[in-house]
Length: 285
Image 1 (cartoon, rainbow, N blue to C red):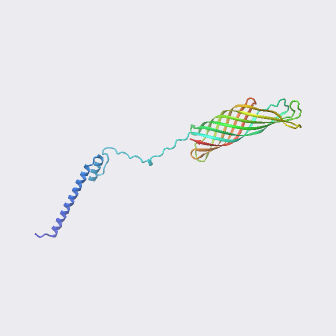
Image 2: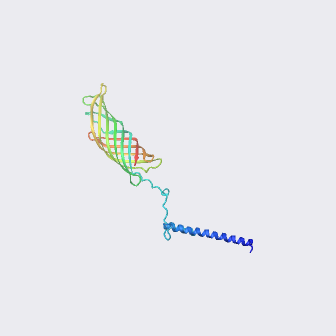
Image 3: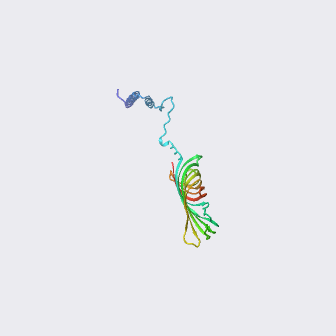
């Protein structure tokens, strides 16, 4: 029978369809074999799901394990606050002795203090945040040197001398004092902030006195005495000023201080007070 065009076309379509199904069947069989050859259960199940066109669920019936956060997503811990500081200080002061220098058998004597001058230097350790965030406790060593001058006039003379006598004395104090302090200093911040501290201590040292006299209407100068006295006294110190940061660890201070020694020398019966100003540099750690 002669082959018609329609028959030819139908046979060609059947043949192509048969070949496609065969190729598809062979590919599917090969994919199933590949999946079966996988040893790891989760990976083999994922292969079957992909072959069947289903979304894969990891560890069926079990809760999904959350992914670990990346290091960049974990917030960095805040640095621990620094609770210790060491500070060195230095300054200039104006001091004054209060007391008398005995001019034996002097009559009509009047006294006046010209004033003193000197410097101080210290080093201290502070423990911060002992109560709240602003109260500190510390221990401080302070060296003080002051030179004070006195004038005295004995208008009625001294002893057998009836002419007025003009006396002058110079007192040089060298004191070493250890203070226990309590201080208020705000936490470090940008700019600057006020601070205040008060301390009680004990000071020891020496007072060197050189006394001379000049008799009115007579030439020359008389050496009355030159002595060194031991000094020991309780001490009170007040300090206040401003402070500011230098970077993350260092800070500066600008302060005024008042230091008082009652009964500095038992032999002389002198009190001593010094008012001064100074600067400091500190380290927090």
